[in-house]
Image (cartoon, rainbow, N blue to C red):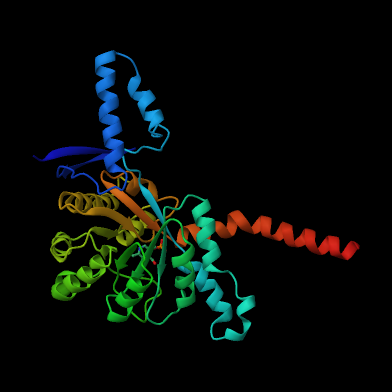
Length: 328
Ligand code: PXP
């Protein structure tokens, strides 16, 4: 049965027709759900807040942000941009390996300490930023989920399987582009997609398609066996910037609604609804609030912010070092 969901928009509101939600494939769905059902039953029969006690025992206190029964939205941090900075200085200079910084492997661990649920790297065919050495080390050291963005080539499928990454996001790859520019055309290469997805899934890897908010692409992704779709939020982000985040502007409202509708279709098709690209500290809130959203994949904005949140301290440390050494 269809139902209507009202999205609070501050100045205005957007009513979107919404398909019923399928359960998430959240890793913690099973045990958490059981704990909550038992807790509710106890509440009903005893009139006490026994459910709360059970939840505490189950380490899933309501309102704490840590719930086993209600899968949390997850943050995937894309660390390619750290490698881009390293390569800008050291590309083709293998002899200076010991000097090469910043190291994306260290960035991954900083991101994990900050709460990243997923570490994402895009091993491009031209190796313009992330290198094979990075993926080797990340596969051995990342404790969160490791997501490999890649083109659907035989070489990349072999690399993903050899490194036993947790998750692959298939993206289109253009040599000339600075970053991924559009969604994958799953519909236009259905047989190839089915084959690649099946090889990855057989190796125990969860597979996501990075696609535009397009009903026919979602349908094609489901038919190809993808378990997740990441919606391309670039058009929404562009509209947000151009409209100054004003949700009364029809263009911005329409782009958000397109993501919401596509997300609902993804969830209703039994896939996980993810989103990413060009999300930043201003435009992310509306996307994170969409019903059924599971993962957000963000890179550039986080690395850009890190320059400013970290630069002052980095300068302070260097200044202290040189002043002390000079005094001796
Ligand atoms: N998701 C996908 C599939 C991408 O290709 C990228 C860019 O590498 C991102 C998310 C992150 O985009 P941004 O760097 O703009 O946050």
